[in-house]
Image 1: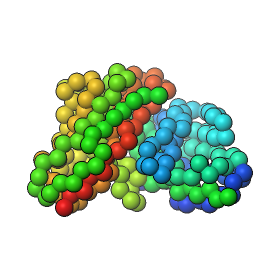
Image 2: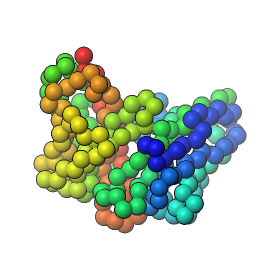
Image 3: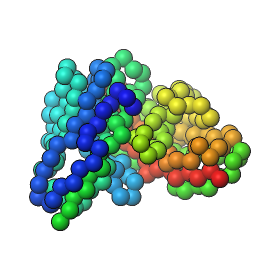
Image 4: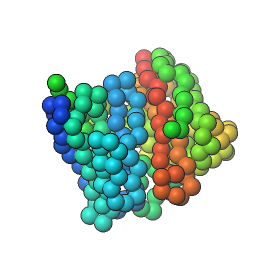
Length: 111
Length: 116
């Protein structure tokens, strides 16, 4: 949706390198989720954040509600990290914990 | 990890026909959701539910109905399918307990629908 602006739209990395994906929000969000969509189309949960930073292996994510952004850092990229990464956010005041999705970042990891 | 299953995984329907997509979750989550995914749009919310007997409109509900007969099951119904409803449909469930990580949404594998 327009409230979630995701960048870059596409990214190419060599194995072993890293980069950051970013989502900017145009309204106040209370939580964010990050997903990886793999080659089979499955959506894999990476992180849920209501604030602060979480780390899991080679991935680290930060959510700053006050400054309206979230980032996903990938380090030491591997071939299996290829896929489309989505951020999705819950807007403050909305009911049902509904998620608003960005349009995704297509990540290609090359040997 | 929460388990969400969808059936069928692939479906071909004719214009004007009725299509029912089914979703089942075994994690006792309160909330369930139906999204569709189209190129250039990411995922968009069609309908959602707070629990058995509840259905709510999402952002793009036109042309779709939903049914939540039990905590575990949530169906999406296309009474009169149109080619514009060709898409990949995802079901998700989440705690809906208002408690941070418990609100994490878990997604099913998706259903590819082609309306001819």
